[in-house]
Length: 208
Image 1 (tube, rainbow, N blue to C red):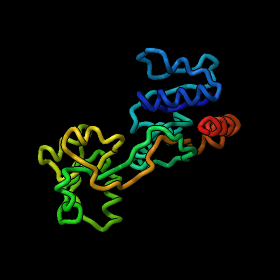
Image 2: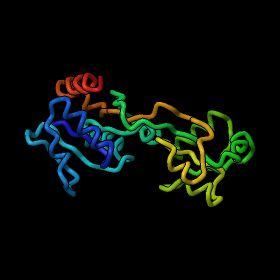
Image 3: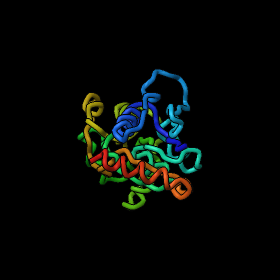
């Protein structure tokens, strides 16, 4: 059996549609259930439904053979995995955002940055040779500049609607081309290559 680690929500739904185009019966993923471990009727595939940040953990550990996670999550977790495919959905950008008037703060002195992507932000500012005070937040990051907690935020931007609703704007696109990726456990790719590689090829063809 090949086990997938999937994050609940849109990525799991889009992954299910992709697998369905590959001829896999994924009806188990479309049922209303509170179960976190699901299996296809033919017992060829199993699915662990986890939080987005936990997908790379399950795959790196070998509990899951394959996983689907956003490139933003993979950058932040920095796990020892094989990245096999860009699945082309869940597209977004990692941006610095804030009030338009604070654009000058990006090239100023001490910068307070609110983000849930602490490791990624640390790497980026280190590469730039710039200092920044990073403030870890787990949700509603847009609230930080509104309340004065931070000068700007470093976050994923899809449509920009939430930023606009709060009077904020993208100040700089830092990482573009962020999308969902298929990742594999390194040992699984060797031991289950006869099952995994044909599936990867089917998925590649289904993406077009």
